[in-house]
Image 1: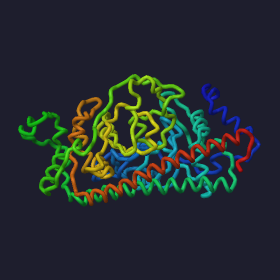
Image 2: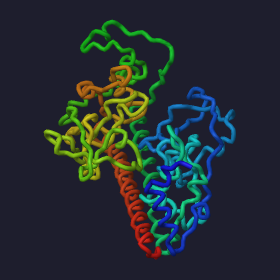
Image 3: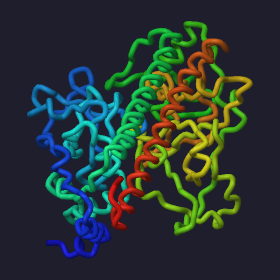
Image 4: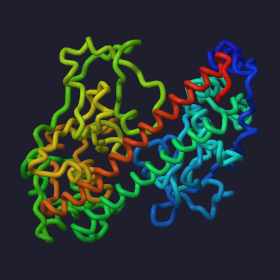
Amino acid sequence: MEASTYLSGGYGIQLAMEAQQGARNRLDALARIWQPSRLKGIQVSREYGSPFLAATQVFDVRPTPRKYLALEKTRDSDQLFVESGQILVTRSGTVGRSILAYKGHEGVVISDDLLRVNPLEPELSGWVYGYLRSDQARAMMTSAQYGHVIKHLEPAHLGSLPVPLPSTRLAAEFNSLYAQIVASRDEAWSAQLEAESMLSSAVGNIKSTVTESGFSVSARDLFGGRRRLEASFHSPAATSILSHYKKRGLRCDSLADLCEGVWWLTRFKRVFGEGGDPYLSADELFSLNTTGLKRVLVEQADNPDAYRVRAGWIVMACSGQTYGLNGSVAFMTTEHEQAFFSHDLVRIIPNVELVDAGYLFTALGHPSLGRPLVIRNAYGTSIPHLDPADVAAIPIVRLGKEREAEIGAKMAHSIMMRATASELERQIAEKATHELNLFLAGSPLA
């Protein structure tokens, strides 16, 4: 009953698609679209619960659970797990974002805020996913949403969308892209875990010292060198790592000693508009399948080229919550060279003569060996920040050139496969958009 529905571009696209004479069907005739029972989980501590991912976390480059649920107290909990290759679509907030589940999502409780889309015929899996990633389908999903403050999309809304039927040849092409995306995502995830496991094995087991009780710090540690009075800087999670390295006789070099530069850029007033360069904020950089990227007019900046990056660099999110993006690292590829980057990212240029870039990325991003040493430097209450000077002082454990190169090569493979998956995602979305444009022009999907 909302008037805005009939004024939206998506509604016009749906009418135009339904007016075509080519073969088509409703989406719910091609796939089972369903929503798990509404989740009312009981949150417990990590050692007693099952990891849980909210809808937005599923799109994170590294999906990291922050909550753990008592599975035996969760109704129909078996519905909340997904398998690699399953299509997921957001149904609330920013509706219509689609993603293929991969190994990083398996064994984790996935929010009911993601609709599950299971194609009824396997040979149409790629076409259904490509359709959902197309510009036209996203516009139609947006027009079908309802709600005032928080938008929602129901299975019936998604199921009613018109879908042109592809030829056997076209369906096979989309299925090939679909299979390559899943395989690339799975391989990237496995290689990343292997690289991190190799680092863990090399430094040896570190006894966990994470505790919710208080701890004491000597005055010498508080006032020696740069004074850090925040308890988080002296947390046992970080200090136990450094103590372990010292006991094992493992050398640590500061990040600054291994890099050609560690810096950030000054703030500037961003003016967005058509014809500008693609703009990547920290949120978008660390997300998969982002939609509607803004375009920034680069002429406004005094030195626009300084805001770009080069393949082989590492960037680190330097603001946000310490349990979220803050301190996360991303390895730059040729794909990133086309974008204009936020100032709110610390740029890091590895000196490849001193350290393998893939190993350095592994050491900084390792969830239990690197991240505690990074995030303890964050300061501030509402929105914690990392200062480049503190980032430059982060200790990097050294394992010898041969072992570091082995770890770095494994992580480099993960980075390459993730970049491949992103390119395939772009291809399947653009190809589906192109085919739907042809259908709207009166041509069948041959």
